[in-house]
Image 1 (cartoon, rainbow, N blue to C red):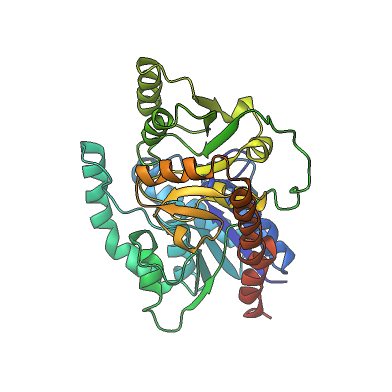
Image 2: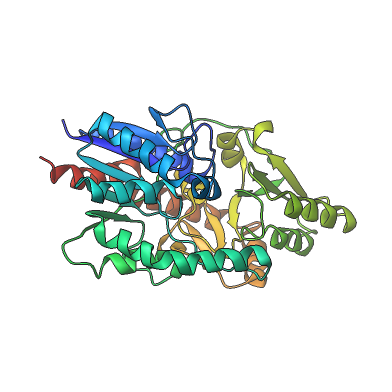
Length: 368
């Protein structure tokens, strides 16, 4: 059996993020298509192998130690192929470098690339400098990998620059894959809705990139409608979260709730909501919207990342268009049902686990 080493910065249940959920799902699918899969965590003792690496700066303090530790993992397991979840994680770069050094085939599973800065301050200025230094390594890693899995083969969005570069490299196997929902088999599970109030649901960590301040503005714009906006979060930027709370309090906005994930259950939140919303200023392929589609929930979003590919929602140019669409759909049961059917059908055709399995099987076929 072909031995695969799957490397990721984040894993569920420790990291309840898009990357964390996808990494754990990918482990399962790699096993299903016939690989013997072992996993490496950046700093997660629940994995078969744990690098114990806390951050990029931790690596800079002890580079030789962590390179040696990663090398020992490879020597112990003797993988035929190394797969890394996303770039720009430190742990991915370490194992891709070692795959080349040890003449082991490698797979990059792209989750998009973060180009900076998104706002002007010292933190982002510093990260922009690091990104410039990183560029030659980034291009080299793209060149040396044998397989490249992309969420969007045609997008010209800067979040998919890794895909654009990969398509220029000769003899590289490039395969489109998709994110899929934890809840795709749960669509028929009955959840009782509150018939007297509609809920617009936003799921994701709270910071300026996710742009939840726009939802405060939206709450003001639709204050006359019987709609509650619920912002469901886990990770957060403390300063940004406090800023949100202060703004909600000062403006005396009562139709918006900030809800920590630990106090509720995501499946029931999605099932009970009216629509989902995404107001991020940058995005790749949001897992929360895909999971909503799998439960027959459509979304409203700005035009970012690969969202033009999604048929299970309405893409908006600005906040005024979002407000217009909410008001237009508020009492339109016919179009709501049409959009819900479209969301589920798009998920089943393009984002289901069977589609993901088919993509991974294409990789497996190269080792048969």
